[in-house]
Image (cartoon, rainbow, N blue to C red; front, side, top):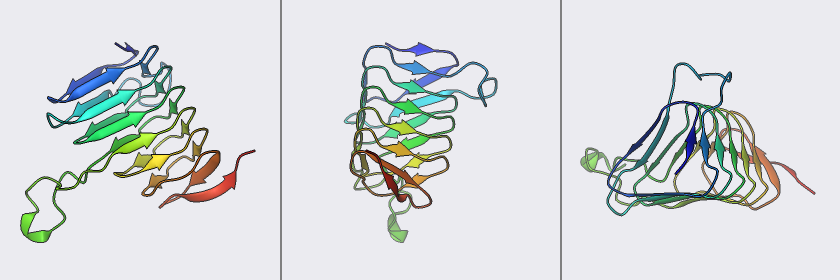
Amino acid sequence: NYNSHQPVLCNGPGKLVFGSNVNFGVINSPMFYNSYSYIEARTPNATIIFGDNVHANNAFSVISEKRIIIGSNVLIGYNCHIADSNFHDLNKYNRRQTDPSPREVNIGDNVFIGNNVTILKGVAIGENTVVANGSVVTKSFAENLIIGGVPAKIIKELK
């Protein structure tokens, strides 16, 4: 189960797993009155796992066709989006078909994700890493880093 300070819509035939003290929405934060959190395990084989002490701000969305793992003690800013699929085949002849190759997303423990961040399929973010506001994360990063940009790159190593 989870705690919510704004509406949370859970959708899809897949599996959702919530650790203890998982929270969605922040009172008196941007988009509190005009948004909701959206969590969808879109396929029967899709799984989304939230570790313990995850705090997601307003307008958070996570959509899986395969598997997304969000570790423990993770902070997520407002208007963040995580997906493990393109949702449509990139082949121009099969565009109306679903993505044939979704790839797992894994967010390590104690990661801090800033506002307006998008994390795309196949990404792993190592523990203790900070993702700067407005970043689009298209590849994996090790632990103990500050990353940011479009596409995200290493800004600094954390000691």
